[in-house]
Image 1: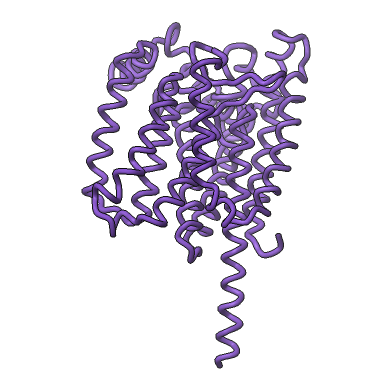
Image 2: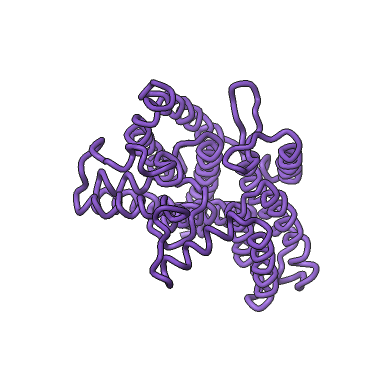
Length: 377
């Protein structure tokens, strides 16, 4: 544990602590209204953060060769859970995304996005696309990405499917695929997204609202654009230094999902431009340390694993921030480590634990290399 990049652990824990504070601030009124308990969401999130810390340190100690050895089985288990979800999943807000196990709820999509990265790192190490050609090198991993993303779309959860596919394509690029070869799956993905939008009216309505806001001057603030309008009001009213922690007004049932999808809006309102910038800075530092661990890795599996996990966290953060600021259509994606939630937090903590493990093995190799050079000189 002493050889790895401790900044990865510190930054993940700092983001989780910020999330715990902001979850309480943004959900206390909702807790009183819905459950007659201002601490309802805080108490549950505290338990999840503690579990997340345990998961973080557990995965920081896992040997990468064990993860690599069981990569196909891990993905198979996640795919099986996605399939079970279609039969016995819990429906919320029109989407079937949770499995109920007693008092716990599990979102298999989060497990699937983690295990897909692990599997792709395992596969691409053994079949580099630059050496295998287009069909042999890119066909199998693209089929896996398409299959997992397709199961996620069925929930329906288009945004998570798109981000998983984007992560997979970027990993194939990191593995050495040619840019012109990547144009084909990207075009196919665009067609798949268009079909999903055409077959799911609420998705199309969100997209049309987004387009109308930017190009038609009509945000539909009383209809489909209500969340975005309230989010922008929250961020705009924060000014440079915010209203003060707990002093926000949009969480008084004006902004739906203030503690989950739109928690960044509450950060902007209560901590202002300065606080929001510091939060983005923490996320950016975590992504930098993750890519640093990937760049220093000599093993292809570790390199692709660290790169894929870092890109995935970054894409989720970027998507959430774009939604909160009106730069993307409204989706149900949480802000990593900060938003209220269980499965997403645990998976992200596991990802940082694996990033730390990669950095620890890198440091060990570098120390041995320096020792050899000293002996040779």
